[in-house]
Image (cartoon, rainbow, N blue to C red; front, side, top):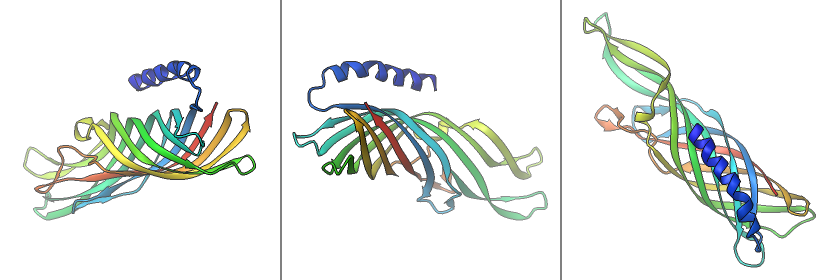
Amino acid sequence: MKKALLILAAAVMAAPQVNAQDDGGVRLGIKVAPNMSWLKSDTKGLVNDGSKIGLTFGLVTEFPIGSAGNYRFGTGLFLNYAGGNYKQSFTYTDANSQVVTRELESKTKLQYIELPLTVKLMTNEIGYMRYYGRLGLSAAVNISAKGDYETIATGPNGVAGISTFEDEDIKEFIQPFRAGLIVGGGMEYNFSGSTTVQVGLNYHNGFTNLLKDTKVGDKEAKLIQNYLELDLAVFF
């Protein structure tokens, strides 16, 4: 968390220098985006178990493409809080020598430093409004991973049972890098001069496996993280 804040602070300090060199419509702003994330399973015996509410915030920058002003390259540096819940099927023998199959629950709470690379296609101004569509890619590095989960534990007598853990560090089981596709759209309202408010909706579709060194039976466990965010930004 401290590392993330230091990176964001450095980016904000650098912002005035970028703006001073702006003679072609470069825009700088602040983004805050509540999100809802969930996990999609590509492995039998591993299923999604509900969504999680999170937040993305940080510095956003847009660069004009061409002279018309309708196309922009967008990027930024964000701190992304996301997660998701899933269930994994386990079979074990209980204290009564009965073979039991149970779905064990896991809840993940993840933090990332995220760098998006997008193209924004905008309409001409209609009144004080402009409408846009967005398409691009995102890359993120995991900086924290906590989880509540259940697991099978074997006692001294060899009998298996369920153990529960809360707020455990699970970073060793989470891939350090996440990549995905961004598709979105929304509108902008110009108050005066360069001050513009943006409201949009973005869908992030993950490409990479969330889990690391995790198996279901003899197969590697694969979970993809997706999330939907309400994109709120102010450009100055």
